[in-house]
Image 1 (tube, helix red, strand yellow):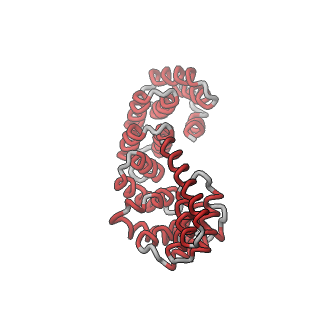
Image 2 (tube, helix red, strand yellow):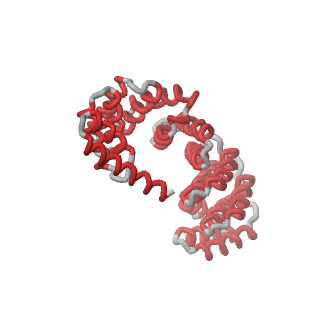
Image 3 (cartoon, helix red, strand yellow):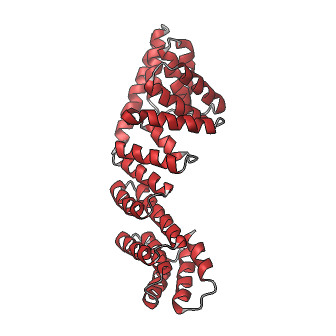
Length: 301
C-alpha cells in the first residue's frame, strides 16, 4: 500500500529526487532491497525535505533488518510530513508491518518499543493498538494487554482479533470482566451467525457464573453453527459435567478430543466423566492419554 500510494503521488513529478524515489519504490516493489536503498538514499541527499523519501527509506531499512535506521527514517518522515494524511497513513502501515515482523519472531519487547513510539504519533490507529496489546500479551503484561484490547474494541468494534485475545485472558480479567462481557454481548448481538462470537460471550458469562444456563444455550448455538471447533465442544462438555449430565458430557468431550488430538484437557475431563459413569477402564485410558499429552506439551515449551 505504501509503494502504490507514493507511486501515484509522484507519477507526474520530473524532479531528480522524485525520479530517484520512483526508481527506488519500483525496486522495493520487486524486492530488490539493495537497489531500493541506493536509489532512496540518493534521493534523500537530493531532496532532504521530502517526507515520501524518508517514509520509503523507513520501509526499506526495516525489510533489510536495520531497525535503528528504519526508526530514524520514520521519525524524519513524521517531522517533515506533519499534517500530511498520506504520509501519516503510510507511516502507520510501516510501523504495523515492522512490529508485526518482530511479533512473528516473538521479539515482544522490541515490538512494544516500536509500537509505543508509533502510538505516541498515531494514538487512534486500531491496528497499532491491537499490535501493542499482542506485544504486552507476549510479555505477560496481562492488565496492559487487556486495556489495549478493550481500546481496540472501542476503535474498531467490528474487528474479531481483540475479542479473541480477550477470550484467552478471562482468568486475568479481574475488574475488567464486566466491561469485557458487555463488549462480547455487543459483538455477539452484531454477529448472530458467528460461532466464535457466541462462544466468546458464553466464556465471559461462565467466568462470572460457572453454571450459567444462558452460557449453555450460547455454546449449543456455537456448536450448531460450527461443529468443528474443539473448544466449543470442550466448553460444552465441561459445563454439562458440572450439571451432572455425564452421558452427554462424554459425547462432547470425546468430540473435542477427536477434533484436537494434542489437547490434554478433554482427556482429563473425560477421565472424570467416565469415573462418574462407572467405566473405570475407560477412565484409566483417558488419564494415561492426558498424562502423555501433558508431558509432550511441557517438552515443547
